[in-house]
Length: 92
Image (cartoon, rainbow, N blue to C red; front, side, top):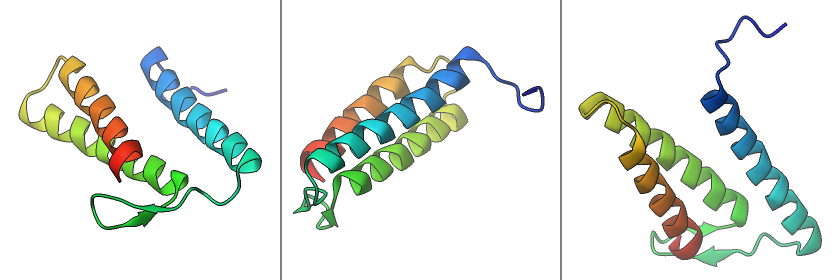
């Protein structure tokens, strides 16, 4: 049924993680509406959803740059991406 895409466990875990984050943010938004707007270090007024999007976009760029410049293994960009996500939700 899904043979058109090369599904592997790492690929599935990435998608599961993204949809889980979106689900958690949906539940938080239902319980505490308003998006928790704030002006952060980059000078942007962002909501929780904006910060998730910036985190995911930055993570993609970190991994692509690492693969293009260094190659495998991918543990270092994983650490950088986690640090980027913490920074985005804390300061952006």
